[in-house]
Length: 455
Image (cartoon, rainbow, N blue to C red; front, top):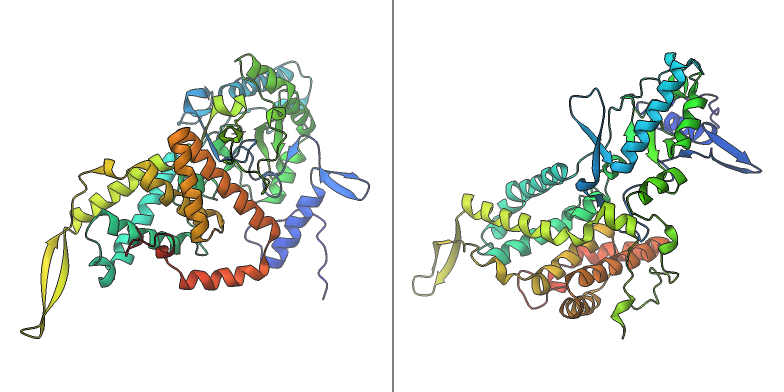
């Protein structure tokens, strides 16, 4: 049975599965598109964050997950109660764009006064991520405390920070690799659906209309009689519009206007600064005999963004220590049973769980690098066997000693990126079944063979 193809954009999240697919396909292929021969593409000046540019503002040129530096923010005028922010040069470009549209209305150059675009009142811009990340961590710990750790064998097996981490890591493995794919590191969080592209500081929205209502997008915005004027004005000032939310402005970082504003701040944006050597090539040896081969990054992303892989361990240490303190505060005792051969009976005795008094004993180099790498493997699906993990961590420690913390973290980040990308590209459908079976029969002890609890 064939289904009649839609002739207008009626897509909504409430559609049933079949209608939803065909309506969304119609919008994707017919709205704000350009046909060149047999190919259909988005109109120049339009970005599709649903199907094409979903990582916009989330990664740098090297595929590192990033978050904006709040010191580079500038407020934009709005009628919202809550002050809105975006990156400084984006705020300036938007202010000038808004002035240009208002001026056009004042001089009756177009009927823009009656347009939905005339007010240009921003209602949404940068979305903070730290509070959301904190709530996610609280939820993860809540699941461990209220459910996982209520199993007697697990509860009684926690007597110090090491044993706590062993059981908590097993819990995280199950959660992260499940269908929910819940992240735990800040990098994993930024890469997830918990964080929208608005977190980049590069996006400004001038309407609260729903992103899911395709008919409203066309009737109210794209068919607005001054849409073409707004569209061209946005491009003039260095913006593109979001195909799936035509009231959403995205900074086009390569546009001369945006580049000019960056240069005024002594910042260079240039993709040409990427090394010609393919950093994701499996033949690339970043340790080898020349540690200097670890690539740098371009000035724009250095100035305006943090690389999250350099901050991940800092957050994890704080949260894991806090979790353990909270755990022993509410559950200070554990029960240990011993068998008496004389009376032929078991005796149980309560013991205090050990306080966390020496955090410095858990050094970044010797303790946290390995934990972090294992967690990132879970989050990205990168597949290394225990021997490979040991080799990678050994080299990361060498880098830590010779070149310092940043180089060691960059090295681990590259290992994760290269492996997860190669695994994804090759698909490895047949291996997926084997990997799943192996996961069922494996534990963290495979990666930490010298410890009963995995650590």
